Length: 174
Image (cartoon, rainbow, N blue to C red; front, side, top):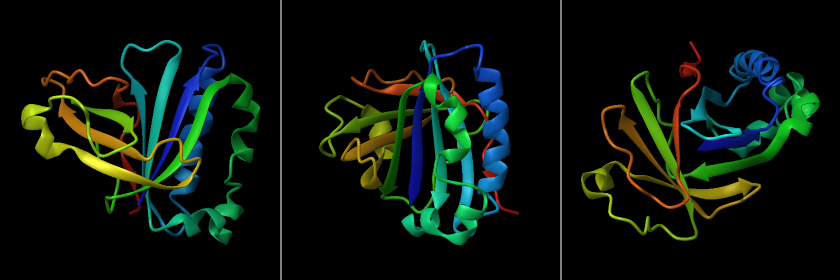
């Protein structure tokens, strides 16, 4: 199962403090049983700044667990930054055992749909398209399509998509 958080952050002056907080929070999340990996991404060429976080988790039960409560999970830790969010959506997705790892030199394109149909020509990328089904939390989409690209590959023109570069390296439990 994959947990994804989408943010549009509107205050450039607060952004460094938010990133510092988030880096520490990702490390705390990895201490929670049932959370296996974390990674953050920044959208290419978008203003205000748009970010995506992906976590590999066992199930939605992680977010009601004692381990999660113990680290202060649930949005209360980031409350001081909430006025800077133009967008903050949280979705649980099924359709993959774990979140894709996006390495340096790679990018990820993500787009939402009401049906598992990209409605565009993906050519050879079709075989790399990962369809995820929303199963919990905000449920802002029914499906999310995700494709990991090498930096040398042109991003396909998919309406409503966002192209992201890794903002942090993938972190996993040791």
